[in-house]
Amino acid sequence: MLRETFQKWCITGLFCIATLSVQAQTSETADREAKWQQDIQVFVDTLSAHKDGQKDFAKVYPPASFHAAIASLKADIPKLSDDEIGLRLMQIMASAHVSHNMLWPQGPGFVARLPVRFHWYSDGLAVDAAAQEYADTLGARVVKIRDNTPEELLAKIAPYIAHENDPWLRLQLTKMIRGEAMLRHFELIGPDGRVAITLEKPGQPPFTVPVVLADPNPKLVRLSQALNLPIPLYLTRQTQNYWYQYLADSQTLYIQYNMCKDDPKLSFKDFTKQVLAEADAHPVKRVVIDLRLNDGGDSAIIDPLQDGLDARLKSIGHLFVLIGPGTFSSAMMNALFLQRGINSRGRHENLKAILVGEPTGDGLNTYGDVQPFVLPNSKITGQYTTKLIGNPKAAPVTPQPDIAAPRTLASDLAGRDPALEAAIAAQ
Image 1: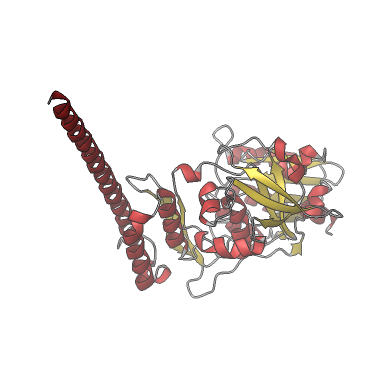
Image 2: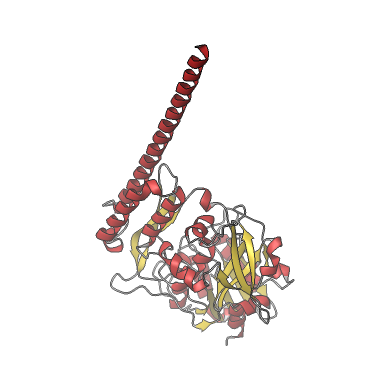
């Protein structure tokens, strides 16, 4: 009798534990869905706010398609992972085709990354940095990532990337394609948990390397390091806001402007005094301002330099501005101002630059002046635009170089900088 009672008690206890477990899971699931519903609604309310939301909201996000996408996402929450929800929000954000409208999901799938880095050269996608164990991939062109060619991947990923032109799209793809969430979404991770990348080097047959995902910031070896190549000048001090160097052999004053923002240790005004003193102390045949790594900030920061150079037209020769896909936002505006001889205050000057390199990552006659936001539960961050920059009646226009000097895989393999070379060679 005692034995039967004990057995019944055990069965009842196990049943209660199982019931409580199911109830807890149900409650947790309901709580997760409620939090995502709230986040998505905050996302909608933030963008569509009458006064403080996205400029021309109904124009850039046509209401019918926008709200249909939102309703579909809300209905799909139960069957989507957190990473997939983040990707869907990215897709909705990018649907405006406004390059400044960005969203950065959080979560495990946006942490792990491929320990190889890509660059989309003017002549194709290739590996320009990799972890030591994948050093044999350096300098190789990408033929396929699993079963997809680079162009096929570009078409698939484009709806998730906020962009207005092809240069920015290709630049952003090289970053996004390394993340686990994107790789998993497009089924680029094989059954063994690896990403098969098929590569090709000149004069050699294609070869496939299975790559394992790594931590967010794997230590990478650059192409120039692995092949003992000279590092192009513009890649030597990428983390500094701005710096300069006088190149005596060509009598060139080279200025790299990487961020439209004052350095706390040296204001741009004080930096400008140093640059102009250097210009006054040496024979200068040309001034080169490099904006290829500058993705924006405050477009007025550069004014003292522009004004100072304008006052020295007779002694500095020609002004060249180097541009490329990474020239974005205020840096793109600076390139146009310098080309047209206009400063940020609208004052006309005689200083008119020659643009050299590749098309910029965004253009004029589009939306800017961003406002950040954070979704309360997922902590997803993003930004939207509050102002139309340029002519509201004109189509968006991407600044083009006056002298085309694209970065190619061959130039990197030779340790060369075609854009700076072209500026120095120009008469």
